Image 1 (cartoon, rainbow, N blue to C red):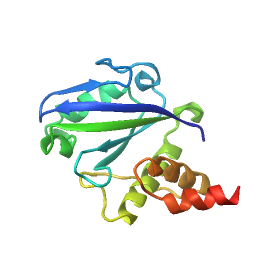
Image 2: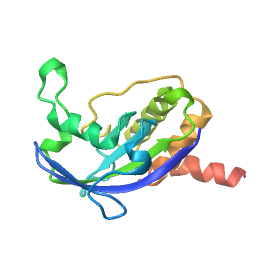
Image 3: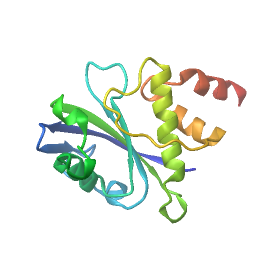
Image 4: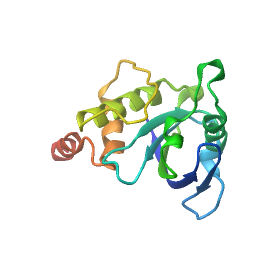
Length: 165
C-alpha cells in the first residue's frame, strides 16, 4: 500500500463558506488532490491535542469540501460538524497512489485504524460522525501508525518497528 503525503493545507471558514491555502501558497488544490484516487484527510484544530476528524474520499478535495459545506441535513447528511465550531483548521492529505481500480477498502481500513489510535490516546475524534470498520492487517495498522506519528499517535508501534529493522 503506497501512501503519498500531499501536504498540510490551511482552512479558514465559517458555517457556510471556506477558503484553502495550499502548501504551494495557492488558493486551490492541484495534482493528486484533484484526482479520483482514494485520499485520506485529517482535520486538526489549534487547542485540541489530537485531530478532530478523519475522512476519506475518491473525489477531488475541493468537491469533497464543497459537499461537506453545502449539506443541510436533507437526505440525512448534515455535513462537517466541525465547520460550525471553529474558524480555522489544518488539513493533512495522503493519497493511496497504487489503489487497484481506485478501490477504497484499504484506505477505509487505515482510516478506522487511525481513528482507533486517536481513541487510544484519549477520546474519539471530537467531530467524527461516521466510520467504516473492516478487518485490518499489519500493513493497515503500520500505515495508520506512520500517519498517526505525525500527530503524536501510535509512537510506540512506530518505534518498535524501527527497532526491529
